[in-house]
Image (cartoon, rainbow, N blue to C red; front, side):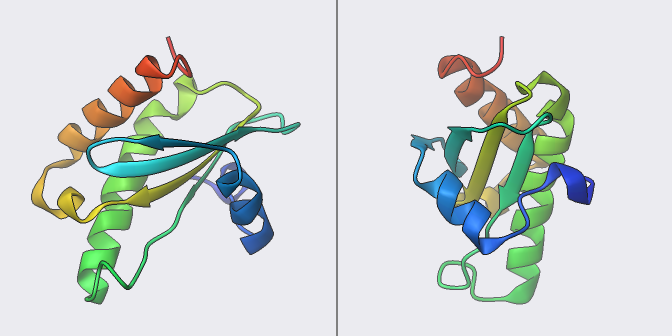
Length: 112
């Protein structure tokens, strides 16, 4: 899990980022918005509507968090990302989520 200073923590922060650009990937829906922060901030929101059981929500959050931890150093300093895992994330390994995340971020020219 990322350090608290590297995460989106408040509901108003999530809403602010959600008003930015929406990016769909195979396992995640990403909302990105540039801000005036000095380091990238990432937030992961899990919906109990799609993940009915607590262990499913925990696994989805853990997989998404592991992918962002690995890709964190490649992110630009002023970016804010809110990630919403899709239900398909439960069927794959963390390496698949990471490769999907990196491919989408490269495609959108967020990372090189």
